[in-house]
Length: 242
Image (tube, rainbow, N blue to C red):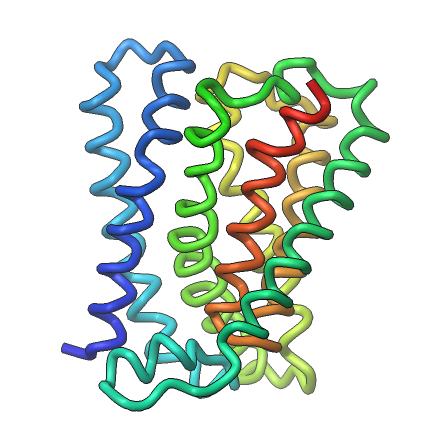
């Protein structure tokens, strides 16, 4: 079994565990007829299965797509890590923070056409909401950037697209946006045309940025950028705008 694949799946499990306060809070707030621990267990099992598939896809397609997870790869292979992890993390955190501010500003411009429930902060305190960064930064990046984006790049290249990264990045970003629809429906927010457009636009912009960081700084750069953005979007900015 590929060691990088196993490391990525284990990392997904850690991300889910660390984000469980946020996930459980969202489930409880939705008032589902199913018991929250049972629903969370089902969600965790489903996510781990998808992570296993995405990790495999990335291990297979990332080299051909010219994409990588350099620090995780050398960790899995027991080699010396590449230098400058700190500078990568600082750059990625700054990019994620700027992205969060831009996305929030865009959302505020469209707020009049959106239901108030879409702007209601997630339940729980600051640190509970901030724990969402582990799910976004780790789990979603392995699913979307490592799994889908690498596969899309390879498929586009085989289809004859001369510069396949950016079309693949946009498609992966739109898929990333669409993956938020179930949680919005769980929160009992109607999926109107305005809501759908808002979700695809804001998450699509963020997804394109995270994909760019993936190509520029590796999967780890995308993870840090996404996690930083989620801290702002889920915890810091709602507290400031309340």
